[in-house]
Length: 361
View 1 (cartoon, rainbow, N blue to C red):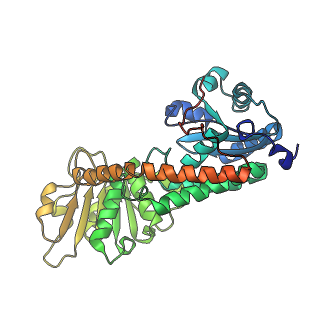
View 2: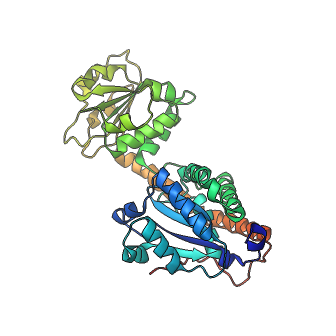
């Protein structure tokens, strides 16, 4: 059956979604379904050969399969059995944790994911790039329906971020710190500053990612007890790694310092900074608990100090603002879904509602 003939199928028979995410499963379950690039291509090819067309989106928070069926009657049981076998997962685990939908609800899932409405951090923008990369990888296995679905989902995601403020504002303390500093520096750019990050945990990594994305790597130093593996594994060109035993020698050279360790005491005090009346302005961000920077430094002229409580206030404000945009974002998604239905040449059934309900085991 070719694409023209397949279009005669109702969307309910044609388009299928099955997968899991942070909303339905814990990380120990999600990792059993996670797919690296090579395995993702293999499974996508097998799905396309078996059922007609396939698109896979696999990130740290979700693994989702979108299938365009050649024939009517494709069942959830058939899909789960196929995936359990190909992913070497127990059938009982797949039946318990994989959620599924068909037709409009399957399409709505893809559009909502692209819009950031299904993300752990509401409205986050990273999912769009992940969706693009997955589409490039799965392109050989997407038929006309899936090509249109993914392209229109990407367009819907961009429209939501353009016409609403759902992606604005910091939703992590690291992002809040960087945004706050950038406002303080204007019109200068944070990438022009000499920056030090102390630590190698998750907050330090996130801070590094955010600064690197803004072009700050050339003047950025990481302080760790040993050379961190994430610097070896990822492309952070230009970053200077400083040994923990030496970092205080470099403190006076910095414009911005992020402290992100689990040390139970202050790592930076007044004596460590070597400040004089002519010292340049210094911004300190203490993202640690217990605190790593002596709070008394906030009283020193030329020093601006931010702590977790101050930054968390901005994060919570941003989350509330983003949540307030869900209605507008949802309306845009619904409008794009109707446009897709028009392309598919079937009227949007008046009784159909996007209630985001799925079939589970």
